Image 1 (cartoon, helix red, strand yellow):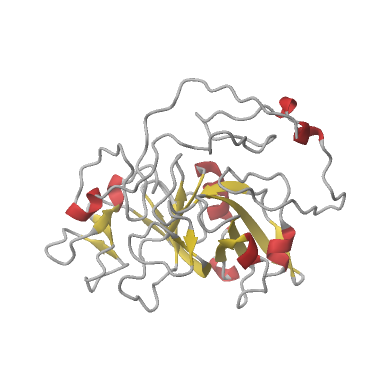
Image 2 (tube, rainbow, N blue to C red):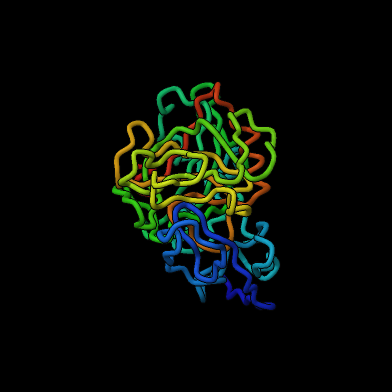
Length: 304
């Protein structure tokens, strides 16, 4: 590929809160518990790896410099396949993973996942990556067919792990159900059960509490010492879909508060985060009658 020159405009310095059990550096939200003040070790304002160009020809996140498609030879290179469902190359390590073509071999190698008729695939190139590619598929005549164009997602600040533990900053690897949603904003029209967030609504992240990894309302009153104050995370949790990780049964210390929610320019503390407009599209698409699931993993684990 030819050399791509990226001109940076004014640096966006106002950072929004990172959810999933952690706070970003520069987050000025009042802490509701002492545990909620721990830093997550992310670099404020960093959206791409220096010296690595982002994928051309796709829409960019507002406020983040994108690569003009006209300056890249890749923008004029025809896809390798001319079929109606072409397959793209693997996601690129550590950089935004937007793709104009679906990686169909990822879904093709996954079975129906215990009757699931809808599947979201979140794929990283390397276990330590914080950028992922998210794809959504419908099960049609025994095959997975793309429901939307792929999009970039942010995952845990420590990447993806099959051995997730509370506070380690990883997104859990595996296949999980999607059964409910919530948000500080109004129901966007999802078929999933949708719970509006009110003051004093918490998701408990204290692994020593009997309420660990559950939604609770009202003051803590000694019931837990660590929790996410859902009503304070108005950007990240404007809308969110609950990822059913470590919920049945709940294992103390294995991780909590795993959601598909709205992204900012930072990694998460374990959740999967995408742009609001795409999240709304996906929430309207998700149908509990189709037993939707989400699969997270690396290129190798998802296509093994």
